[in-house]
Image (cartoon, rainbow, N blue to C red; front, side, top):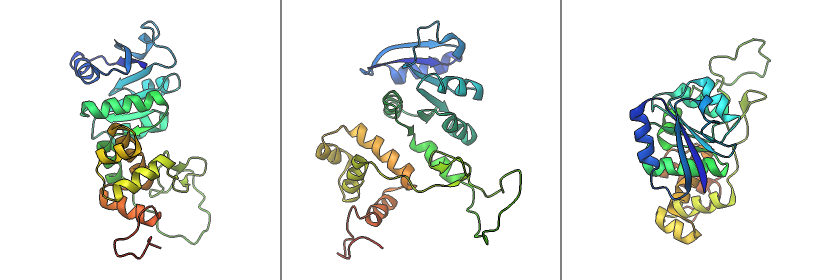
Length: 239
């Protein structure tokens, strides 16, 4: 169980978040404040999951270094999504998210993981910059990155500013991908692994982010490429 502190000044948004959270048996205590500087007085400790609703950038940075933080941003706010991820938010969801997704995001934040809701993940893929054309390897002396340089993110090498190796799947994520790609439903996968369907959804969100796969067809192809499942023609994994 965990405590939650919702930071939101707008009364209508406050009611909306409370309705989404209400009834979650994992939440021990939930308080609401108007600004981050009121959190300590409200009893928010270091382990309290902080929910920031459409916050200013300084509030995101302030909260992320002190608490596990979930940031809610408008669906079209791609820059705010990037800022929240780079600031160290544990979860980032849309302000239009539904109850199940918000509860998953809260649980992941409390457990120390990372969650990006599918809606925002799709937006980021749509807004991704074009790939850099191949170069001759000559160094480029410039104070600012070229326009096509990918922006650093969770799967990027922040030190060098260029893509790092693709993140490896955790054992449970690999098992989940193999079962889903093999044709099982989310519920069947959950039963086979002895976990909840919500956990399966969480694993799939992480898998999509790591493999940059937007739909089941792409997930299946990645599973074949990784050798987790075999092609229906019996030819084995793709080379």
